[in-house]
Length: 214
Image 1 (tube, one colour):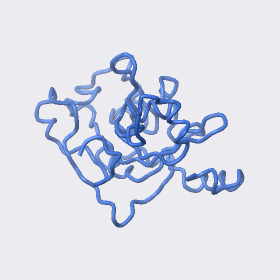
Image 2 (cartoon, helix red, strand yellow):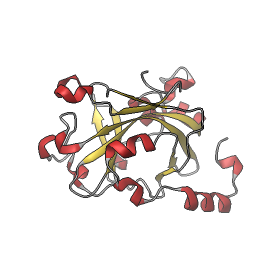
Image 3 (cartoon, helix red, strand yellow):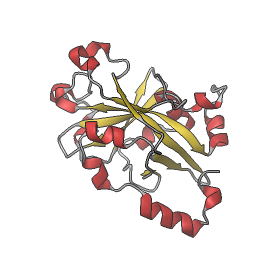
Image 4 (cartoon, one colour):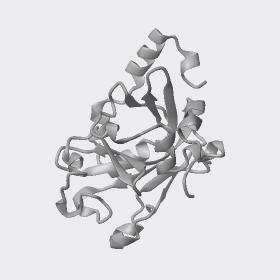
């Protein structure tokens, strides 16, 4: 196992304290932070278990000036109002009536930007992920897409507004290896966004099999 077999409880607490990304990290602009998240470890702590995955694909959404953003032109709705808070909060929303999309609110208060986590590479708690997502026939299908990984990690609306640097869910700093290269590409599924559909604001680790689309 990636984490729990390597640490006693006290050692694990010290490790998290040392390497958990702090609030200040999330106060950066989305287009800067989105590629920086690649390679870092997303951790969800359940009652008696830990689910963890390496972030391998992200997208940046640039707020009021971005036609693909929920906050384009300063739009505020009951769903997206959390985007106007200070960076470091989780923005979760439902699509197709059953799938959850997971975003991290970033930048300063009233600059409504977000980073969308599209895919992760499973590291810890894989058997629990399989229980959570029985539709996944192969390991890669557990987490190689925004709705797949959230189902496997049991992300739901209860995470809305939580701190991404809290106890239940957080991200551990972890650098990319020398062999891992970052690719910039167009974001997916935003053909309605005019010129913004061509902005290179999707970032992923080259040749990683858990990326949703290469």
